[in-house]
Image (cartoon, rainbow, N blue to C red; front, side, top):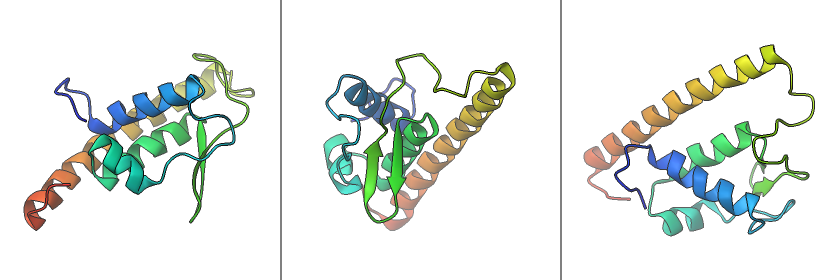
Length: 124
């Protein structure tokens, strides 16, 4: 799945899931495939899938339910449009900083996943 674009694998998976949500492949209220199914579809580790779903959750596109999975939020904001109640400049600055930290954590997760594969001798 991962191309060698220099973008983290979780960001590539999140982009593809985001596009599937925006185009209606995953309708509002529907459940995303299981993490196991997403791992097989994209050929990545559980860490990458968790991070991609966490990014979509941070953006307000999905919500998760412990033991049940991830679900598409209803209603969805239009592309590039903030969700209601999130329009203040100060709030947007905070969200931008959180997303930056989230990206940093995603890169750390991906590196940890690589180290785990090397140590355990597995290729997920």
